[in-house]
Length: 392
Image (cartoon, rainbow, N blue to C red; front, side):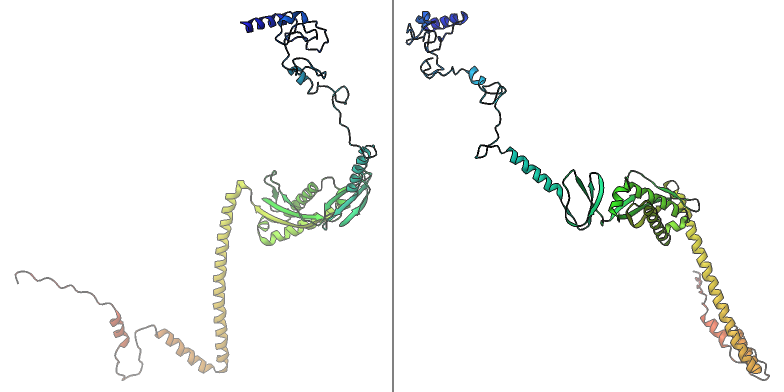
């Protein structure tokens, strides 16, 4: 029952604007709240020491702070932290960062700035150029000199700017590119051919390469396309498909490209041009294949006819040479030659017959051996015996 009465009194004090824990000051109010000292506990009462009301459990000693500490309430704890907390020697906006000091009391900041500037000057003034590279030096935006391979030095940035490029490496350019699609070129016999090729080049003069051309790779591509179209226009369609014709086209394109780039003072060396594909357009590829098959058949028939003609001619030449030899023998001995030719002719003719002609009288005919031989080799007819009747 006493607990409920004490709780009711504390609530009444809180609603009246008084702290139920007393003043919490060490005699600051001189017992200003002491009139309610009867509400305190065993330690309360009219102490006269300013500690009226019940004891504050958050302060050691029951609300009496002998060392002058403030109340350790939750609001005070969070108030002393964060950006709105008390300033610890950093000005009105919170704590400030103090740069470490040297033993003499001076700041390290000037020395740190000097070290940063020195490192920047060293890094922008020292240049290591590779064995296949060269560098161009621009002083206040204007070209002054070229750096070769090795360790080189220059004025710091931005007084001098060094641009290093690979001058010996081979660079390849595919035409047409992946985004361009089909590249159709007109041949000398008014046919279209789909070409794709590679141009290999490198840098011959770095100064001209950097300051004569705005877009070097695009310039090389345009010059290559112009040279290829001019070279294909001088060739027939069949020449673009053959190996020998391709080699001639590649050589012609390389020479034309080098001539044009030298006239531009581009500083570029064309190493070679290689045709990867030479096909008819996709729309007429089937008809083109039919034409190729017909041409191949015509070539085969033409080769067969030429072979037969050469065979007949060789036989005729052989017979003519044999006749010339016989004629030479005839001129030496006409009578003997005539007799020999007669015998050879009769032997060739009569060897294919089965009859023997004898002109001399009183000669007994001989056995016809060729006829007997022919009959012996001829197939014999098969005779089937007839079946006898049952009455016999």
